Image 1 (cartoon, each protein chain N blue to C red):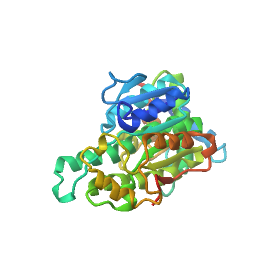
Image 2 (image 1 turned 90 degrees about the vertical axis):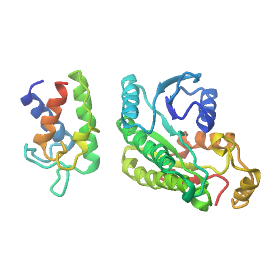
Image 3 (image 1 turned 30 degrees about the vertical axis):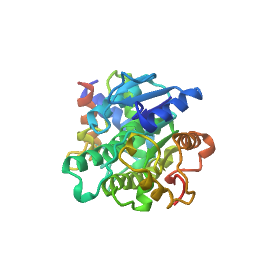
Image 4 (image 1 turned 120 degrees about the horizontal axis):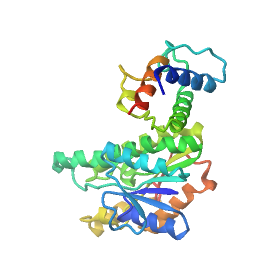
Length: 91
Length: 225
């Protein structure tokens, strides 16, 4: 998986979870005030990314420090989540 | 399968035996798995990495997890002023933080299934504010608060979280507690008798059963308060 594939994959997953009702852009926030997703949907995105990671034969860890940290959370934007998903695919 | 922490001794062992007797596949998590009669995974619940590794191992099995029973725990029967710092740390780390680690790291397995039941352990000492159990009761009060709140967080995924709060059950945790102290505690219960491990196992069986599908975020005080 390359960086671009990761980006497309993450956007596709989020779009699916949101049932295509919202167009998803890279700079969109995933948590916080302007968030696209409620907590329920966020968990669904994570579970779907776990499945996708399975297909690419790596483990997607969404309980890591990177996921939880407030300032560096991978959920701060679609781009950050894509980047983390890509980084984890390389471990 | 059903996962039980603290499966090598005390209540955890009794619960494991009961579940195995009724034909459940049980996996025990314990610091020492050598003495387990069932499949075990070495796990120190107070250590985040250890719990995470155990969760990863279970996840790789790709089998449904029906219930997770947080039975690992340590006690400190002492006045707060005579409890040393390391005991305070150990009690909170194992009882409260260990329960939180297990719930948060094993929850994704159940969220994915959209089914499952967590059973955490508190103590009647929380509701009765029993003298000489302040640190232990504080750790378990945290477990109760966490369980009630966590239950709401996972409810949309059809995952239930409940607490059992036993009174003085005969286990290693009661070492050093005299019969008269036990009598005093029991006399404060609605049903003033000493319950047994088997009574706790009955409650576990009830809580993991579909018949308890309406129960979540509850603390069951054994004997009543």
